[in-house]
Image (tube, rainbow, N blue to C red):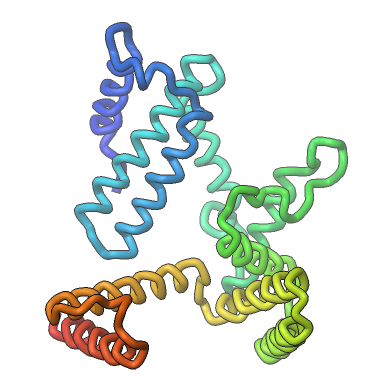
Length: 271
């Protein structure tokens, strides 16, 4: 479905009014740099809405993200850097160039070949890293990515470049080796080495998930949501019984935890 140009025009009218004389003083002080944190925040809110399956909230948050992107494009346009149309045209050309199996005569046999071809095209687009040297394989990876997401991207890109374990069994063997090193560091009581080995173990675990189509960041987010829902139900049950959850003995907390799990599962099944 194409985006309604009238919708974007309406949003552009709002932004133009905010930035015009007599508009909003706060908006008029903003720069692309000051808006960065808001883009990240709104993107997280959009992701949360999508993962929660809340369609009305997805629509709202999508609008917020789009507003910020159009706002940033407008600020650049006013400075004479580029226009939104130029940014869109550049992106469309890039997508066409990177999908020769759709827009050209290239034939790919499977998804692995498709992704390898994608990486080859990307490397061809960025032939030097600014110092005359060829661009590195990971130069385009954003430095500000959250660590768990970055680990997934590193493994994913490495796999496209043919730099990964040959089999799932080999990857599992590496994880087992990292786990043994983590346990050895614990036995030594070396805090610095424990942190290093724990990081290595997590990094390898991310790859085990990736090989099964699991994105570690999304999986951990789901685990966080599940834990919070269960704990909040524990608090609710304790309040209903006149109990203060933190003061309860551990065996009673375990009983409430299991009760909360059962209730949430039953409610989910009834939907």
